[in-house]
Length: 350
Image 1 (spheres, rainbow, N blue to C red):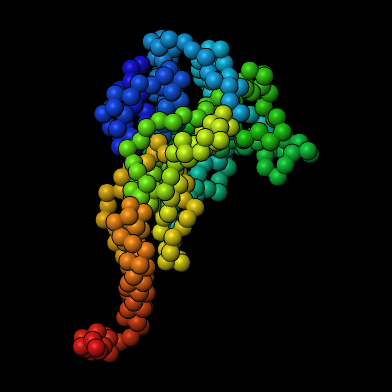
Image 2: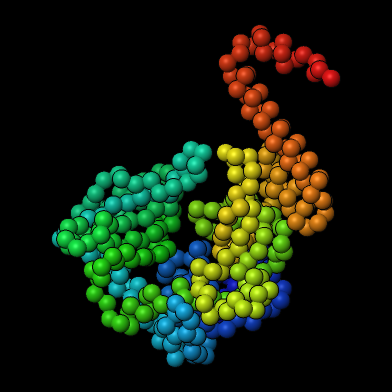
């Protein structure tokens, strides 16, 4: 695997293009990590890429971190990880007594965006559940997931039964497999435990991105946040470069994030708790309309192109326009056309 091939596993086209322009040299461990974090590739494609890394890139150690066990051989870790995923898939697709299957579809839920829509029915066999899920996904043009639940497993279990979940794209290709094991229901060796829970999720890398503070960006990969514009405030690597005491040893994949301010529609103000993977960032290219224009005003303030006074004036104007639009639509909906036409056409008072 060469660098351009590894770049293709980065979710963001803008980050891919930036690394290509820099001819950024990736380590074998970084290549393996980029394959793992991809939301654009099937599980089969990831395994093919990891085997390519094993066959074409030199072996190396995997750095021990707070949530990463550390390995003397990256190749051995990849073999172990792929082997455990295949083990999970084999058990997932094998019908067992005391287990049932259900499927959920990723669908729009009104103004609340998308969510996993489930509770359709339970199935005794994988093949039957997969066939019905595929038919539904084809009709609705959506991705889906199948959950294999082990029921009545133990009186000591938590409120959630152990399960194996497999996610599929719209065409039915396997994208990911995950395991929920609340009390070690699934037997695993120490090596399997480590390679599953203390490998990729414990890694952390500072990979260059083309963005600067104040850019209007969006996540392009996470199904929960994709396409939502926000003003970039910072990233974890930026913070660690500025604060020498922030030891990256104590960071893992969950810290490879970007934070910023999105628009909070119900309150017509900012949501200051927006967080996404920084490798998923892309420039937001769509026009900002209505009250979301506040993001553009704030972006200009962060980049010091306008002062605080101008930002506040723009906020008052944009919020007033949004409120007026809502009132106008509400009044128009219940006033008779005759009355509304007279009011709507009346000259504005000075």
